[in-house]
Image (cartoon, rainbow over all chains, first blue to last red; front, side, top):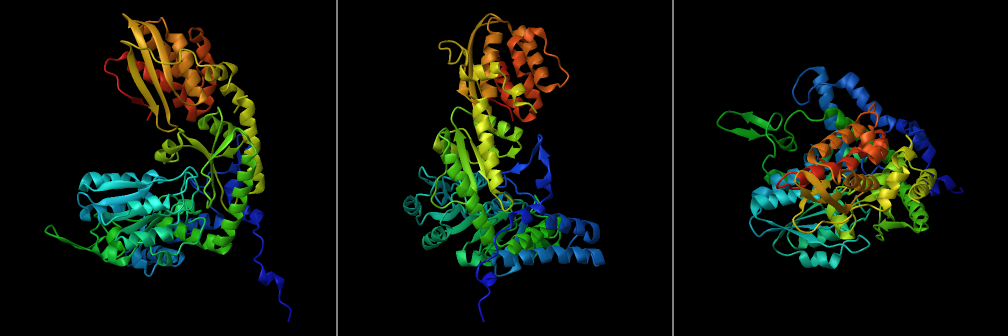
Length: 416
Length: 147
């Protein structure tokens, strides 16, 4: 029997079909069809996510883990079903390792305050990289102030890549925790997280990975990576805002004290002493973002149906097309030219401040992020106040790249 | 949304060739302004003759709107006394934020900033220099921020 060729090669990525799933892409901005190139800040939502949240809100909402009535059980089933969906998505061993948080930032703060703060002593070291988002800098600075621990920073090179040898040199028996991005939000650099984790573990440190920019672009297997902590946000993964995940190894979570106190995180409360609920609820005080979790589960279903490798290949093609086009423009400088990048194209235009660039592009319907991207040390390293950043998602097209290039030419005309 | 309304020739000219750019040495009053959103920073130095601004300079790095606004401001306030500067700031503020505000004649070239009000995200760019000037006019001024 002859092999069916359709089974041998994956189907072509049908971006037009994908676009029909995202209602906002049909809107106009300033008289132009929206060209949305700001998904690294927040991605848009597809119908399946919007509808899953609507279905929950219209048919299943009540508080979770509390009532014996039917709706509370439906809401609990939806919420805990979402947790199991996340567990499978990142290949955690148990749902006890999946903590729902507001987003990546809250996940990192939880680790800083509940893992690091009670343990770290004066002279202990926390090692991060020079390309971190403020969310992977400031929580550690707070811990350093609280404990006397010292923040160490592994440098990057002019391409925006981690200097791995320098990173290894900074690892020492004093290093208690390593916190690095999986993918840089400002530069697009993909970090060698598996090697980082192996080296850190060999030095006796635990590792937190800020996965906010990675999860939308690459399959993440926390068990294979060996990460101790891995945090990400739903809203960069086509899901709702205000919900994210902190994955942590169960034995670490067992040993950590609660972070916030309140309802749901307790077993018993008396005025003398309270006892803590089991994992993961010990870290989820208060009524959680139930509809957000439902939306996140729908978003995971959505990206897995499209296939993360297919999404990544599509985005990589767009990134290469845009990089080549911008490289042709003599007054554009690309910021972040790592060999291994994902989705993000940061740049400056000679004599045009990124803020002006953002306004001019917006007038053409092209949405990019301009500013320091919550990574001021990265801007300082490159000696610039800010960049413009185009970022690509599953719904972007060659036409979007062309619109960006045309809008940049328009900016050049305004600032002739 | 008309870009030409925002980036008028006067704005582009003052961005490219900012007037009164630099710092005043000596016993000048000084303040730093910072817009954390876009990273704009500028320093205003000025020399007072009694209540009157005898001389003024600004220095910094920012977008076209913030640079041009600061340049236009230095031209407009040089030679004016505090009360007149205060009134002018009020008029500029109205110009930047109130859709119906006609540009009073007293604003002169500053009226070129009227296009900014169509771009709410940019109002802070234009007003940073004025807040910084205010700080410089007050004793013991520190860094001001638009946030």
